[in-house]
Amino acid sequence: MSDDLNELYQEVILDHNRKPRNFRFLPDADRHAEGHNPLCGDRYTVFLKLDHDIIREATFQGAGCAISKASASLMTEQIKGKTVAEARKYFADFQQMLTTGKADEDSMGNLCALGGVYKFPMRVKCAILSWHAMLAGLNGEKAVSTEQK
Ligand code: ZN
Picture (cartoon, rainbow, N blue to C red):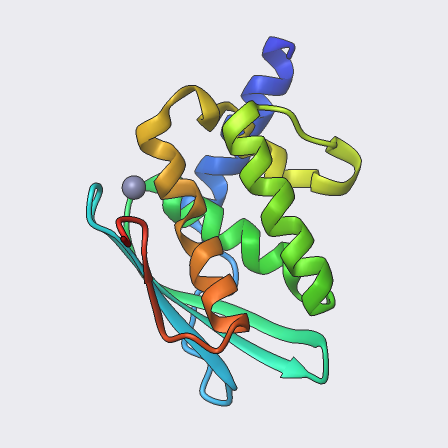
C-alpha cells in the first residue's frame, strides 16, 4: 500500500472518531445489542431498524478507543439500506480483512481504512466489536463480548 493511501486511511479513521456517523439512540429500533471488549474497555450498543430483510436504520451509542468508534461509525454507514444477508457478508469480509489484511477495495470502500489493524492483534477486537454487536442484534441476541467462552 502506498504512503498516500495510508495517510488517506488514517484520515478516515480520525474523522470517524471525531465525528462518528449515526451516533445516536434509535427510539424505534426493533433490534439492539450491546458489545463489550473487556481487554480495552470498549462498550457500544448497536441499534437496528429492519424493514423485512432491509436494514433501514443502523445507529450506535457508547464509548471506547478511536479504532472501535471509527469502526462502529463506518459499520453503520456500510450496512444502512443493505439486506441482512449483505450485512452478514460484510461481517465475514471485514473479519477476513482483520485477520489477513486482504480486502476487496471495490466492495469494502472506506472499511479498508481499518485494513492495517490486522498487524495489531490486540486492536482487532476493538475493530470488530460493533460488528459482533450488529450480528448479535440480527440474530435476536441482546449482548455479546469479545471474551465470550
Ligand atoms: Zn479498543
